[in-house]
Image (cartoon, rainbow, N blue to C red):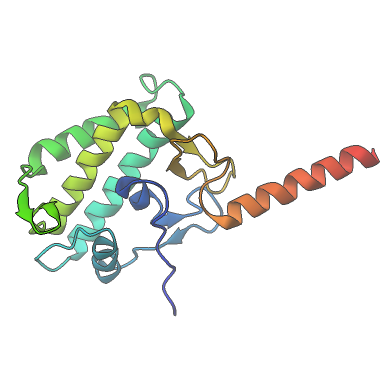
Amino acid sequence: MTPIPFRLDTGATWLNLLATRGSAFGKHPQERIPTPERLQEWLAAVELSPTAAVTAEDLELAIRLRETLRPLALSAATGEAAATDVAVSDAALWLIAFLRDNDDPLILEPAASGLTRPAPTTATAALARIAREAATHLTGPERHALKTCPESDCRGVFADPDDRRRWCPSPACATRGRVRAHRARKAAHQG
């Protein structure tokens, strides 16, 4: 069976992690990182390949991080009050604890093409870098550029700094939305 392609078009690595579960709110969600090997491939695709092999525990941690970030991202993108939402509060507390225990120091190394960062030693270290990026994005001015796809089965969060997108970068969501709008206009004209 051919693996489901990765989505790397959401505007940030941490948002791409959210997109490793497609149609997250639909009847048939698509898991893009079902195995440690696929997580290893995804980490390579986002340029965070750890030097150590990815394990089943790393996969569980990646999925937990992803599903912890999802309510935080949705809350930031929709502007809904996060302080009263237990899931959002719990997610924020878990993220804080995860970063406290796993965030690696920022070390930049000079390279011919500019500054680089050493490769993460473990998948946990790679995930901590993603968690740090998410926390920075969610608490900084970039949070205002977050949007959520209006398709009910998707609700994917993406960065839209130019405020030009209505749907997530998935062509399927835009097509479904446009077809539904066309049918609604057609029905309104006939009625």
